[in-house]
Each structure stands twice: as structure tokens, then as C-alpha cells.
Image 1 (cartoon, one colour):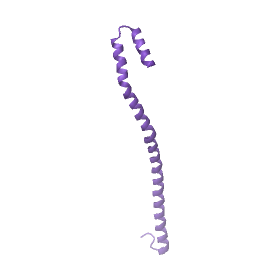
Image 2 (cartoon, helix red, strand yellow):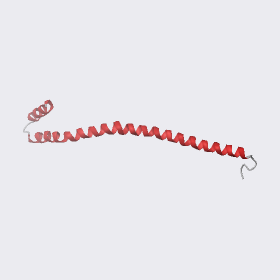
Image 3 (cartoon, one colour):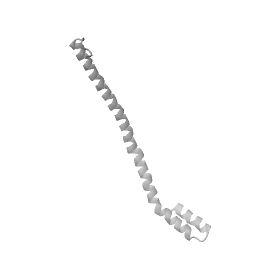
Length: 91
């Protein structure tokens, strides 16, 4: 068996060192994971909210774009389409 010729104090010291090493590795892993958690929280708080806001604006503009498209389809001339677009932009 390994270490049978060593005194009990040395064996206990070695075992304690191994336990401290494992605890240090766990602490480093926890710190690393907390760093990635901070990045994900930032992503969720800012990027996803901005994406949701842009999606909401896009969805809100769908009916307006449909009205413009329908007006363009019913227009008899390109001048009337340009006039409708100018009115829509100024409104």
C-alpha cells in the first residue's frame, strides 16, 4: 500500500492537502460559472428585451404596411401611389 512507511501525521497532512486542493478547484469552477451567469443575465436583460421591443414594433407596423400595399394595388397610377406614400410618411 502507498505510504505505509510514512508516519500518520504525514499521511493526514497529505490527505488534508488533497481536500484543500479539491475545495480550491470547486471554488474556481464556481467563480468561472458565475462569470458566465453574469454574461447570460446581461444578455437576457438587454439583448432579449431589445429584440422583443423590435419585434413588437415590427408586428405593430404590419397593419400599416398592409394598408399601404392595398392602396398601391387599388391605385390607378404611379403618381397616386407616390402621393399616398407621401401622405403616409407625413402622418
